[in-house]
Length: 250
Image: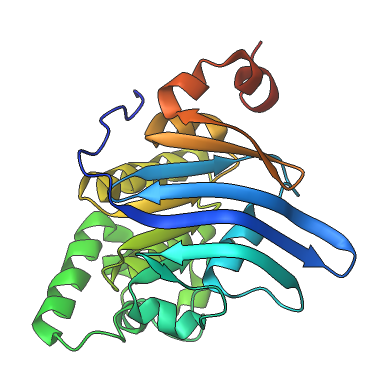
């Protein structure tokens, strides 16, 4: 497996975060970060538990409870801080949350239809369901099964396919490999790379720094609420600081 070093030719900005601060009461979880994602890029945000990575994604999607958010969040040239998550989905911004968040009492097929609820092209929706069933044959075999009865890996497959049913311009992935077997982790990252190669812009939060940086065009390191390092994925893989802190090398 090699680093994804083919930089997209188009540099149209999809997401720009500047001066983002998030506070829960007196706790400053994010302390003023700048981050950008350009069209067609796969960007990864790595860091230890509690660094503020998930909080950053939730700030983008407006799904943070009882907290103070400061700074600027621009998506496709539009300020979206304070915009409801329902409206963001209509604007083609989708997120696969940590913990998957599947509709447990709905079938796999029904979950996929929910991912396409902003669309009205029935033929296209049916074609996309067939597409993701081809990518994830396990889901096709269990299409009528309740999502809550699936394994963790199967639920992750479903959560990713459901998000992609909305044809997102920006896909946010929060810890897609968490709690999965090594074989399933490889499958999930195979799909991440495939989706990126199809041109979908991705911001990936991931604790498996090695796989994330191997897949990414660029990466950011987050530590204690701050961005402490950024660069091309391939360069960061070889950076001694990254190797020692996040790759178990050095």
